[in-house]
Amino acid sequence: MLFNSMVFIAGFLPIVLLGFFLFAGSGRKRWAALWLTLASLVFYGWWNPANVPLLLGSIAFNYLLGGYLLRSRSKVMLVVGVAANLALLVYYKYTGFLFGTLDQAFDLGLSLEHIALPLAISFFTFQQIAYLVDTHDGAVVEHDFLNYCLFITFFPHLIAGPITHHKEMLEQFGQGNDFKPRLLNLSIGLTIFLMGLFKKVILADPMGEKASPVFDLAASGTVPALPDAWIGALSYTLQIYFDFSGYTDMAIGLGLLFGISLPANFNSPFKARNVIDYWSRWHMTLTRFLTSYIYNPIVLRISRRRMAAGLPMPKRGKMSLGTFCMLVAYPTVLTMFISGVWHGAGWQFVAFGLVHGFYLVVAHGWRAWKARRGWALDSDRWVHRIPAVLLTFTCVIVAMVFFRAPTLSAALAVLAGMCGLSELPAHVHMAHLRTLVMIAALLVWVWSLPNIQQWMGHVRTALNARVETHWLQRWLPITGWQPSPAIGVAIGVFGFYALATAFSVAPTEFLYFQF
Image 1 (cartoon, rainbow, N blue to C red):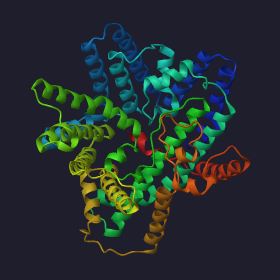
Image 2 (image 1 turned 135 degrees about the horizontal axis):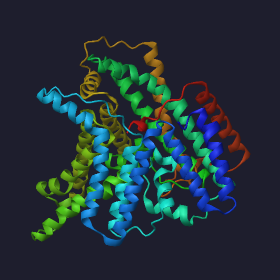
Image 3 (image 1 turned 90 degrees about the vertical axis):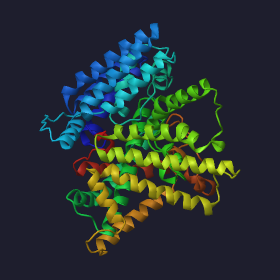
Image 4 (image 1 turned 45 degrees about the horizontal axis):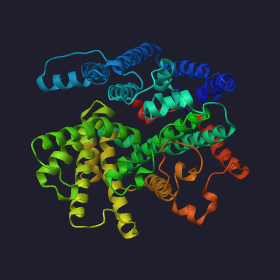
């Protein structure tokens, strides 16, 4: 069941909302939570009912272990719990890749039946690992089974995030005054949902149609011509931008319909001036998880070893090369390697993670070099900002080729075509020109318009949304959202166009569903 399908929009969602209104509107929040949990399990089981027992088993195991950790704080049991979660993830997501790699390397003649990847296993696994770690560290107080089930299964974020944190969700289920029907929440949530649907079906899906032939050609072993390669890479980069942005908006909007604010997960990442800034804007909850539970513990362990050896902790701008590699480069590359592998089983995803690890090390090194010389780390002057944004965007495009390609060799073929190494003639046709106009128009959208958080910054939307005043809002007061007839008509037009398009074609999956 897809957010952009008729069965969800015209069937599932109205029924779930009606039940929620009946229970929560009469003050029976526990019944409302139970209703949403059961509805979320139906939503999850719509794809494959056989995966529901796996999800329930994972929930029960982690809830019981969390209760034990609340009482004992046993490090051994924490390791057992994390290992069990990772083992489940590795089995379903990486067994085929690992056996295939060994077979290719040593010609072992191995054969393995295809293991179907359960939907959302990467997301609910990471959420529960974080819960166990925080329980062991004393950061978890509430231990209510129903609220825990709803925290994991809540359908707006279950399939592709945001990766929620237990504290920010359990407080809303248990004590939140907004966990009930409210007209303002409905109007805000519906607005955000419809804008996300517009991004998905009107902007993202057509770009995917432009990108697929190029990557299919590369997968066949042919290096695309220069214009084709760049059009394919740019089209996919914009496709995943609007696809993921659209999904995030739809998830946040759906949460608000039930009075629940999901964490911010997308904040105009293509406006980033460096890759550090980019990862603070793209899939923000994944970055939060990786930083809190992988990067920081690695740095902390290295720092403790240095302190035990009597070595001081240097400032970022005064590190030697060796210290920089140990304290910055090593944990950064390892964390991004894990990020790449989390996204998928394949050498192309390993390359994606390592490329971004390299980008981040260079960015941190550049900032350390500037700090050592007393230079400003960031400048708001357009003569500095525009080249920085364009350079960052170009780096992102290169990495996205690995992200999209079905194999590492296909990714290298596309990159070779982008460098002009194809033997195919580089003719520019009218179809190319039309696509380039579409790409240019979408880039103008990306770089010049305010995002949802900026447009609706004065009302409750996502948790911890970083709201920056957009330059248009300083000149045009009408750029802010208001519950007014004019805004209602405008959203109605956009929404009707998006709904008509979504209902007239077979719905396409969101790109992050594959992870």
